[in-house]
Image 1 (cartoon, helix red, strand yellow):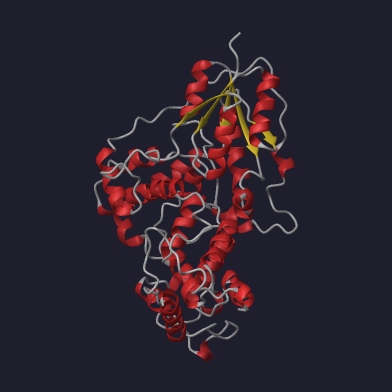
Image 2 (cartoon, one colour):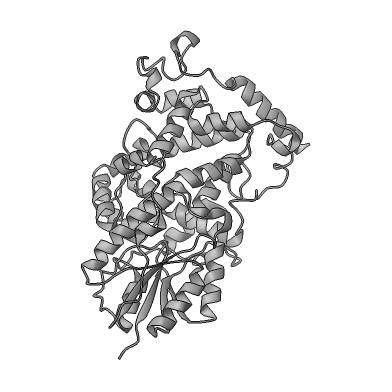
Length: 459
């Protein structure tokens, strides 16, 4: 009897274009397993919104496996210990998995390889980190040359179909998904998430086909919060319900500027992995010296930031575009990309609050919270990153709101201002605000304070 093959699943919850499943199916009966390991990532265990989405994604995968008369085995605990225990229970000797690059998964992969026959495959990114390097053989630190080098070697992808799966003679025991309590109950704050998201490969590709119909306008529409111009593939990509190669393959049939920009954003995901492979603690430590001790208003130095941080988190800063974005985030687990930049810049530069406070809040509230992308994006805005915007480039939220025509977006998420005209709603006068709060700080005052703090830090 051929020994069963374990497929270890993490952020790769699909059957299509999934090399671990294909290799396992060719070798013998397949036992798919997901281990919920809340301790492995320490301070970056899944936040509330991600845990909600994970529940939906695992349910979708269970349905897909059922079509192949297969099951998903669920275990909770130390991933390496649980996989070794499962191998002993079933007689399996080989574990198949897609390679992951978060520092905790790299450590776990090394530990498991010492105990079992672990076969790792690529597939979570277009190109594995290290596939393109500089002329001296070093990994890229700057995105633009990384993108150019990647485009030079990408020559299409062979998308693997779903494999036929055979079952083991007996199935090992499994916990139930409901026992994991991934869904909020007291209180149930996930109503907006349920309205916005459905999980699974088929749902993701249906949504992507709708986006493909309008991708020619993506270069402009992606910056307009009032238009539904984003693909909203980020949670589907993060949990691996689709592979980036599947999206690239579909998008490669189009030559518009919108399609070109979308492909570059898929490469940004690859770039973020390259960064954390070089700097594993990048989402928690600033890359550039001189910021942490000199710019941020730090409670350890007597600064009082709690109320301002809370106002930002709850969408009560008095800046409509910022507050609309933060309320959208809380309700749906997602925020428009242009508004993400505006809201992040406001926290860092208007309020002079450490970027890590924002990273932690996004980590808990985003359904697409990704260790690499979250850290890289926050350090890009803060000016502390290896490739980042300059700190002195301070986004003006009021003019950004007008420039990108955010009036309808604000009306949806800040209903206190819905009665105002398109011209008034971006920066309401005091008597127009009603119950809506006054600005937490004036833009000119905030800009001058930020530049002064920057100069002092540089000196």
